[in-house]
Length: 235
Image (cartoon, rainbow, N blue to C red; front, side):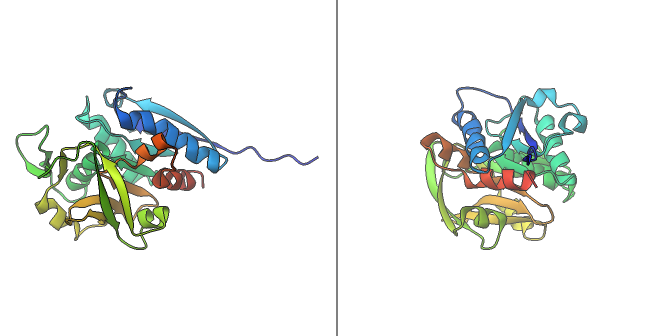
């Protein structure tokens, strides 16, 4: 009698301060469950509040880390710790909205040497990596052009997508210009050329987007980046 080997249960850390009223937080479990079902995986997820992350030890054992929307976080340092841990230990990583913004700041501080890298929503001093958008993207949808042959373009299978947002802050032009010199590459732009997605080319899967692709799950559609995250995490 043949026995089918048991598949590993994926453990996913959802880093952020859970709020049942946040639309993205409603969508994320649905997106994970859909991707796991399609891939015939078992995926468990833990919501890790940012004020519960004291050190990298709190992230050990997770197969993927997702820094989720709804910032400012209670403890921004908790989010930065999770991002750095994922980046330095090749743990598959997603950042959406606030996670995208904080991934940029973490990279600026710890890789690019911008010790004073700052977020205009919460900081009054420093070099602003994240600044107010010229036009609010709260509950807006827009077209994003994707760089060909990247993780994100392969996940979607096309070079232009339409996704929704819930944010008032984006990448400062000064910082966007500096990214061309790094391994954190811009891989998605809106129709005005503003940065909407990045990925780290030296990492197996490190993708961050200003848009909230997980919302697709609320209307029964797959979230391609969540499918891609689970595929990498399960290998």
